[in-house]
Image (cartoon, rainbow, N blue to C red):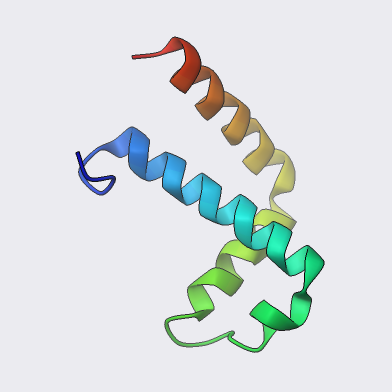
Length: 72
């Protein structure tokens, strides 16, 4: 099933995008900072969410991991 039609898969993809973009911005900030607008600006926004809300994102990642391991 496509991730768009399965809510749990969509949440997993969004969490992975947030974590990946925040990690890439920590390693190479110029890579994401030059694209703050337009279609590629969504990756910059994901990185900002990952930086500013990192405790909440971490809790969501742990909850998602537990749900994938022990859930349905």
